[in-house]
Image (spheres, rainbow, N blue to C red):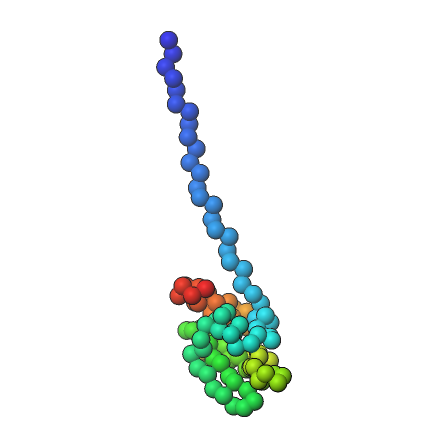
Length: 111
């Protein structure tokens, strides 16, 4: 009589979750206030200089200034311009800054 030999069990590592794809900074153009807040949250700084509002988002590496202007008869504000800058006054890659801010929001559990 032969003893049964257990079949080898292969251990399968769990598949890594695909890395999130973040939008390009150009996707900010045309967003209204609620869409912008939905994407990046509430700004750290907000200033109104009619006919514009300036919203600022920042982290340790950079700052993103978003310029919203009133559009149409409804008086809603929409994004017409944005710019990034390094917090240490050095130039920063616009996409790196934008994605960094989105990742910060994800880590905070609001994404």
